[in-house]
Length: 319
Image (cartoon, rainbow, N blue to C red):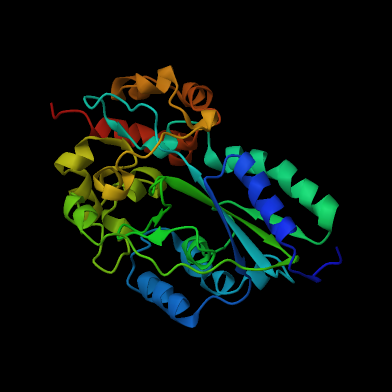
């Protein structure tokens, strides 16, 4: 197929959907690429302006880049969105410090890219054009495009809920110059029960459906570098903060859309025995070399040795 040429072939679209599903996706949708709605861009800029991105300065720099898919793939005509479930088949003992179940298995960036790469290579060979895989690393407005492609509904905790699979899903996008008929955009929202907002022990979930990273256990134990100070110190000295080693699932666990969802069939996301048994004392006893070896291929390396050690020490009772 000639780059950018129009195609309305249902066979092509459904073949792509089937192949991505076979690669492990639980939902696949299509949207017309281009500029992000100005209201969405403005809302994101307000969130940044209020400081809710905390120390993630790169998010501010990404505002103009996220505003149009052209900045990621020149000539992009279609955004293909895919969701991959990471719902756990088993969880760590509640007596152990918390590790978010998104980090139970191998790094999702690597796993999903590994699964999508041969699919995209086949599509490029078959139909031509340019194709780019984006997995939470390129400046793409993931939740916006997930809704535009119709694969789910927007939750009050900021996640995208996929019917039958809940909100415990990673999002990935494939941008392509191939013109593919878009799916119906989704304007659906969650039940609006507010359970996630009420359950958040640190007040990180705002009533407009955004997250204040300065009070979020996920941000404070994963992305934040160095010691916690001020408001952040207060959050980490709370009961919930003292129980947290890496990330948080409280808002996901309380969500009614996540009740009775099936565990992920992606083996790379399953909880290995060594991580199931990991204690704070184990982390404290690690050298930097031990850390690198133990967490090889794990998203927990995102916190870095110093960050995870800081988190582990914070879970210990006072002398």
